[in-house]
Image (cartoon, rainbow, N blue to C red; front, side, top):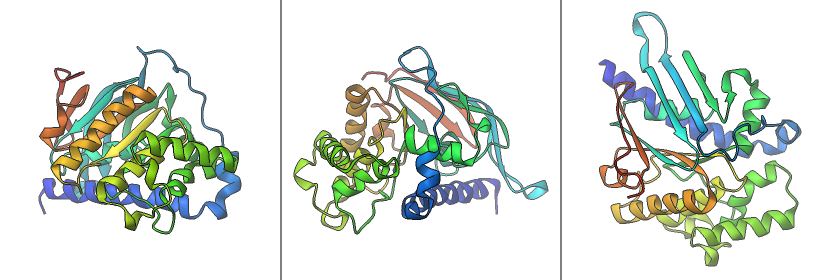
Length: 282
């Protein structure tokens, strides 16, 4: 198998691990509620300062395996994501996009280098601290939507708030507010199987906003959608950045969607080969 094929397999397995990790956190909530709800996320040191980067990735390397058979998924990656920006990671499958998202989301640890979220070094956090960080400060949007089939749209949006033990009335009100924000006010009681792909991804975006995160990480959010629906989802993410003052880091290889980003970071074979801000605000 070539190095590119190894990297592609590693990236795809990383995507599966991301979805599985989040699903595990949700579905085992009844077992781990005490840990989940008592762990505290680090304070938001840079909140309100538009010039302070939310994410800083500094000379990050990541390898799968060791020795001659090691697959080097990331090789010295450095960049920043500014508050209130929609930053796109562009690259072909196997370029390292998903691996990088997993590291920024605290789902994996770099082999070398440093990643900070709003001034907090992720390496300084233990597992309960990382769990609290993902619960309180980061929202995730997956290519496969990641909704729980037996729950309604409103209940799916409410899952992250349940993990924080938000009172039921407040949780239900916020879930409906967020569904209205993404254009699904009339679909709150429908289950995922009763919704189109685009509608399911809109529910996923609403869920990602539930706990008012600093950062939303979206891994190929339009990958299972047709081009028109995919563009509508990207326009929704663009609108969310403006209306909710949230920062979004999104991976995509669709050139038609890149123009909606404020900043584009291009990855190739685990390295950054270019950064473009010419489409900012377009």
